[in-house]
Amino acid sequence: MELDNVIDAVLRNIFIEIEASGRHVHVTKEQAVKLFGHGLTPDRPLSQPGQWVAKERVAVIGPKGEFKNVAVLGPERNEGQVEISLTDGRTLGIQPPVRASGSVENSPGAVLKGPCGEVRLPQGVIAAQRHIHITPTDAARFGVKDKQIVKLQTYTDRPLVFEDVLVRVSKDYATRVHLDIDEANACGYKMGDLGRILS
Amino acid sequence: MELDNVIDAVLRNIFIEIEASGRHVHVTKEQAVKLFGHGLTPDRPLSQPGQWVAKERVAVIGPKGEFKNVAVLGPERNEGQVEISLTDGRTLGIQPPVRASGSVENSPGAVLKGPCGEVRLPQGVIAAQRHIHITPTDAARFGVKDKQIVKLQTYTDRPLVFEDVLVRVSKDYATRVHLDIDEANACGYKMGDLGRILS
Image (tube, rainbow over all chains, first blue to last red; front, top):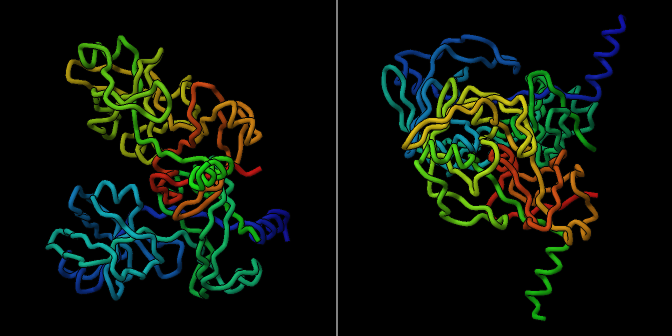
């Protein structure tokens, strides 16, 4: 084992890579057909296995403003969802609740507009609760369980300790911290920055 | 002393009120005359004694975008300055360094546009370093000194501990934590929320 590999293995036992999620949309197959005339087309893969950015883009329209050209993530889901930051919410005139992805009950809606049509989501606009995707192996190593709430120290330009970080364990995940853009900016995140779960 | 007063006094010995600073501009007298045809006119006071929001507003223009109707704070200063969040920087196409207010050396510039003319700031666009304005009395009580860097626990919807919080002591201040909008959103700040300096 070369020294670089040893260092890498040690670091991965202490730190977790952070990623910042920009505003994005999830749609159902039916919604994709309405918006684009067909299902989603993969463009480039995301770090989470099986997840990708679609070639298709949508406008997200709220009562006070809109964002054009918003990323759509695939594959299609069972329910439409819009993930934005609280700053984005101000621009749109929508107050998103802070929720785990998929928890959209009683959240506000928005209008999606694609080249072939519009979809009015009655609900689904949320700010994603900061979270850690983690494999069962890494979860055992870090001593954390699915749905546990942990604190995360960031090693970033404007360091801070995030509380209320949701742990999500699955063998289908790659181990990564996901922050929204407000959170990423608040800690001065740059690509490749690391975090550490505090015990 | 009524119970409410006692409780209030105890709380003020433990917590500091947080305020979120939206994007805003400081201008010199000369710049105000160019932009508005006259000096700044006070509209409403800010929490810091002697500081106020002006009736006048400006557009802030960057290479990639602009914000219209940006608040201008008075009184006039010796140098123009634009305080934005890192999120705002993305919109404008400007990467502001994180700096204490007034530290604008080698920071990027921007164009300000008012009803009477434009001012090209050669430098002065910063993201304000998170900071605590504190009176000498409160500084002694909390055991902190001017220019000290402290950690601040927020008691907010998305609690976190900010590191690298700059303490600024002056008898001319009111004791308040100042966050930018990225930071305020990252911790789920609402008006009236409190923070606590960690020893």
